[in-house]
Length: 257
Image (cartoon, rainbow, N blue to C red):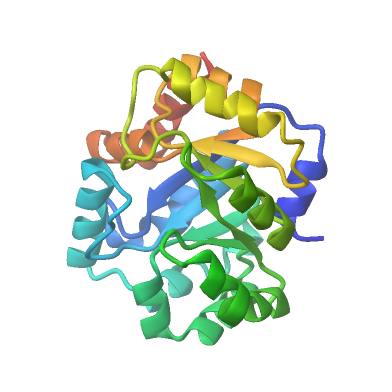
C-alpha cells in the first residue's frame, strides 16, 4: 500500500506535513532533514525541488530556492542524497516542484526514479489539470505514485469534484489565492471556504496549507481538514538555527504547544 494511503487510513489525528527546499540551507542536508522531521513526529514530508521562478511561493521559499540553486542543487543531486532514505525513514515522501525542472530531467524518468528511491507522491502546482489527465496521469499511476492537486478559495465546486474524481492521494487546500508565507490568522472568508469544502464530503482526504505558522492556525486547519501543511515557517527556522534538529524542535513547539 502506498504510504500516503496508509497514513490517511490510519487513526492518526492532526496530521502534519512539512515542506523544505532541497539544498537549503546547505547542499548535503536533504536526508538529515527528512530523518529529523520523522524523529520529531512529523507525518509526511514535502521535498521542494528548487527552481529559479517559483511563482506560487513567497519571499522565504523563493530565497531558499535561490540559495539551493547557488549551492549546486539539482534533481540528480536530490535523488543521489535520498537513494537510501528508506533505510531510515518510513513516512510518506512527496516531491513538490514546478514542471520545468522535471521536464528537463525527463518526466517518465523522473517518475521511475521516484518509485526507485521510495517517493510516494507528487505535487506540481503549475501542471494544468487537463494536461495531467491527457498526458501525465498514466505515467504517474504506472510508477505507483499519488498525484495531489491544489485548490483555492476561488476553485469552483465543479472543478473540485473533477479533481477529487481524478486523483487519489490527498487534496491540497490552499488557504489563500496569494503566495506562500506565514500568517497570524485566517479571516472569516477563508474559514467559510474550509467549511464549504468540508461539507462536500470528498472521497480524498484534505490538507490545508499556505500561511500556517502557529498553534492557532494549525489547530484550525485540523478542525476543517485531515491535517496541515507547513512550509515557510520551517524554511525560515532552518535558516535561523545552528542545527537541523534545533529548527525542527522549534517548529514542533510553535505548532503543537
